[in-house]
Amino acid sequence: MRKRALWACLVVLALIAAACGGGEGGEDGDTTTTAAAEEPTTTAAPEATTTTAMAEAELGSAERPIQVLFVPSVDAQVIVSGGEIMDQALTDATGLEFEVSVPTSYAATIEEMCANPGDTMGFIPAFGYVLASQLCQVDVGFKAVRFGWGVYWAQFLVARDSAFETLADLEGASWAYPDPGSTSGFLFPSVALDEAGVTPGETVESGGHPQAALAVYNGEVDFGTSFFSPPLLPEGEWQLGDDPEIPDDVIESCAPTDDGELWCGDYRVLDARASAIEEAPDIMQQVRILDITAEIPNDTLSFGPDFPAELRAQIEEALAAFAETPEWEESIGHQDFYAWSGIEPATDAEYDIVRTVVDSQGITLEDL
Image 1 (cartoon, rainbow, N blue to C red):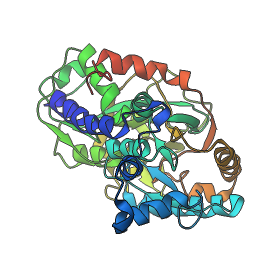
Image 2: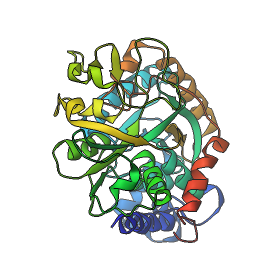
Image 3: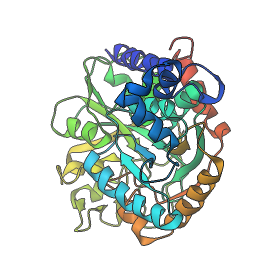
């Protein structure tokens, strides 16, 4: 079931390849513009007139706003409302106009960036970035920082009273994952399960990280996978090799605060369970971390391959400044949004580890 879900994603991405294929540098990615160029009698067609007007409009104008795309890893309404705060901050800083949208899937986000290579910027995870860079040369600008970490992990969640102790125990167990295009929700867990020699049973695409955690909480599946960010400790910092779970003796104290944070005594929880507390305030008492995967480079802000360099520089400067303001915490920095506590410049080479994982799963451009 899991592999069929992955190949279903590849089928969708095959359509992306068709949309993005053609000339170098993504020049043939805009299929609407290409079609208009090849059709000599479009002057009588209203669609062609609209397309021509859009093409002539200046990028960043009200007639042709810059498209800001967010993958639907959390509630779309949270993304839209928080994205509009970012939209306004960037407009105030640059004078440019932006339009926020949340495509229906990770694959659809990549498709949109490749289909509109000169108009789009996207907040996409590592797996999506690697595929988009292969398909149409989407280019990374920033990566997320979460409480000082430039990396994160995938976590395996199970019911707290379950008998599961290791990944090997998950053989034949039912699995909820956010989306087959999710780096931490699907790709890295798939590799970990393969390395453990585990073949899950029934699989469920939950539609988001908190939803995968809730599927375990509600008893709909045996285990779920989602992102893991280290907890904030009362003293010192979490280190790789430390137990990812909060100590047992404070679990009963875990509860959401009035401002929507999840605390267990003096420990603050930052993994995907913290995004599910509105629906499940006692999720910490019911759902525990079984294991985490190898580290993953953080999510990206990436640009379409033909995005104008001058406008990109303006936006990057404005976004870096916005990340230092209180409004950031109400936008992409909010726990219910993407929980980015900051950003820093990223390079393509940082995502080579993800390319290695993609290759190990047999995902190549030839396959697409």
